[in-house]
Length: 74
Image (cartoon, rainbow, N blue to C red):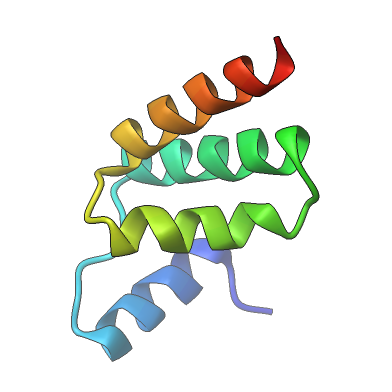
């Protein structure tokens, strides 16, 4: 089976972009976790796609998702 790093490296190459750094990967996974816990699980991958479409860095996307989750919770 292909590892996460191998998959991301090869998929990034197929898309003609650089793979995420370790920090970016952690932020993306955190963003997905926030979305999955604040909503239905299917919101996680789509939230990452929306962040990319908006041109946000993973850290900023994670921050905004956390702020939204807090607002919705309280």
